[in-house]
Image (cartoon, protein in one colour):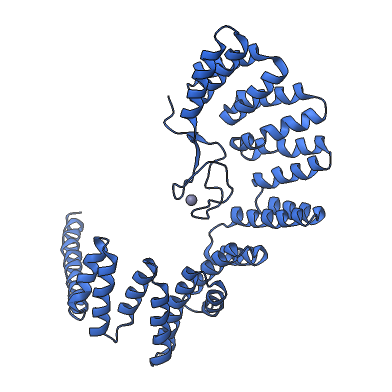
Length: 390
Ligand SMILES: [Zn+2]
């Protein structure tokens, strides 16, 4: 027993010594690397940290001049040039490296990867695509595939995007199901524009096969049927959204109500929406319910609805609705109430926003793809009221 414990006591200093040696090797390596870099490189880094990009460019230009052999310095300079929009200078520098240097195949590949990034940033998608396709077999494989996917999405080449996303999914193990379902939906939209409903229908089913939670596909399938006057079928598609993502029911609330109206059963539509609201408390549902109640059941019922909601969860939207309904109910002080309501409406203004969970972009309406960062379904289906009273 005792001997066993002694044995452990010897192990600890052994590992300690090992770590010390390893650390020293690292430090030595680091010192060696940093002394081979020109001082202007560190000056440039300093400018970068303090966001003085133009000065950083000058410093890196000096560094490249002093240490002209280093490709890494060229790449650093190139990436700053790209970042501050001097893409033409980056392109010329990388082309110059390709043409006037004796590069081994690995180095040539690295320069091409940089140049492809320049083209991508410059919006020269054809040239970028050509280079990235060449890089798809080597060490930049995954990077090239990601860039190609980005190009296909920007160029709205959805079939290519589906192929590339499927390939990336196999190579990386990361799921692209959601993205692929949207590519199919985009193809369906093209079909709808071309008045080819049959192919649109097929693409929407492909979207659901790719990703069974694709809400957008069921919305569009319902739209197709509603357009053909098949309102029962349309409603059935929209009802499925409850089991995909109930938060998205607000996106179809007015569609559901419209179709029930066409079927001459508006009350049935209203009670379905009321049921959804009871279960999920979505404010966008409430807005549709409020309008329908006003129309079908009169301003007193609408007033009651708005008051209840205001007590449950105070919001400018509900306050606005309460004032509207009250203005209709009480003839006496109608003008005052309208004035208050106008003020509230002005205050609401642009406060109902859809905020991208990836980049923070704020949109006034719902987008499936963020207009700023291109992420899919990063904007919520329910807007948030900014400065909410809660
Ligand atoms: Zn975004």
